Length: 227
Image (cartoon, rainbow, N blue to C red; front, side):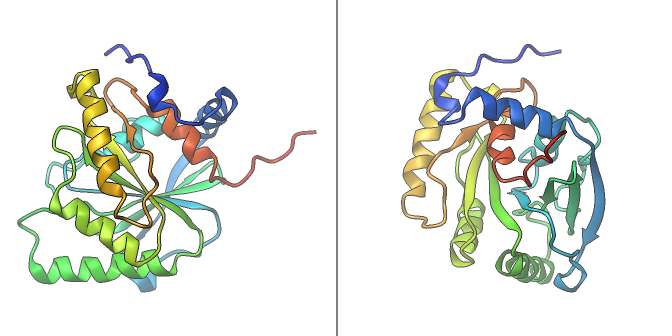
C-alpha cells in the first residue's frame, strides 16, 4: 500500500483540526446508493444537502469518491469512458447526499446524446435547491481543458457555487503541484461562481482526502445531539 504523503499547510486552507476530525467521522458512516436518474423528471426528492462531483471521463472521479468513503466499490469505475449517463445518488449517514455526475468530454459520445446530457445537467443545476456545492475534478497532470471550462461556464450561468479539485496529484512533484494550483486559481478569477481555493488530491496516496472531507462536512446536515 502506498504511503500517504505529508499534507502541507497550503492544502489545508482555513480548516481546523476539529473540522478535519468532523469530516473523518462523517465519511466513516454508511454510504449507500439509493437513486439513479437519467432525466430531470426522474430526480429524487430534494431533502438532504447535496454535493455533486463533475469531471472529464477518466479524471478519477469514481476513485476519489471511493477514497473519500474508504470503500473500493462504492462508485464503480468504468472501463468504457462516457458509458455512465445518469446521476447516481449516494446517502452518506443521512446527513449528506453525494451525486456522481456522468463523465464529460468523451469523443465517441454522439452530438445528440451530448446535447441531451447538457440539457439534463442544466436542469439539475438550476433547480436543485439542496445542492450546496459542485466539485469540478481536473487532472493535475493536464490542468484545465476546454471541456472543463465549458462545465465551469455552465455552473456560472446556473449560479451554482463550485470548487476545483485536482486529482492524481501524486503523479507530480510538490513544486509542480503548487504551480498547477496557482495556474488554475488565476483562471478562476474570471468565473463568478468559482470558489477561489483549489484543492489537490490523490486517491492513491490519500493526499488532500482528509481536508476535502472536512470541507464537505461543513455543508452536511448537523450531526444529531447525543444525550
